[in-house]
Image (cartoon, rainbow, N blue to C red; front, top):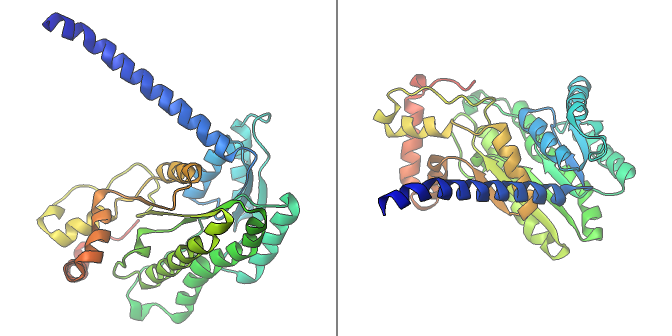
Length: 311
């Protein structure tokens, strides 16, 4: 009996590996069919996450519209995508200069996209501007700039493209937000306020457009890090508040978030968190045990001098 078990183990492992391979291939083909020939607009495509989303959707056969503030960086992204793509299976991306903090130009850009393709199937609102500092030291001008980039810019672009989706009774709008749209972190008042505002807008919009078969999705990671490097371990676990902020700052890699955006589009998910268990638990605690949550956050403020700055 023991010998049979030993002989069966490799076969079992081989069978499991085969099933996993089949699942991955089916998922890949499913993802490709979900966006093939679709017109996909990605804002801030020159960011780390924007580049990975462009890569994933370009490989899937989407008709990409890549938006960004720098023409040189857009051109570099264009070259990177077209140099490795199969021209017979992909479409040439369209490049568009767009600064979402400049509200006056957003409507013109949206009309340019509609004039080019006639429609937009998927809009990925990815652009975001961050600021960190005590609330009393952040000027109102900077507060307004953050709100323009993180709130008014995305909703303006969405409002211009939305009537086309409603008239066609199809489309999907994806907001790449941040978990700070669910709870605030000290010294990020303007950023957290903009993320709360934009999340509230899209939560309301989701219910409004459901009858038109337009899907509204939100993908909320913690911080998006630039590489697979985790913070060094120290004596953080000696303090609850230090442990909380340390775990919150782990963040997600752009590749991980881009793949989740693709899954969200494919499965038409409404809300997704890309975070480790601690930030997810923080959302739960903030909702059901607010006093404890506020105490932990206040503890983190008191020990701020011992917390390293974000990279």
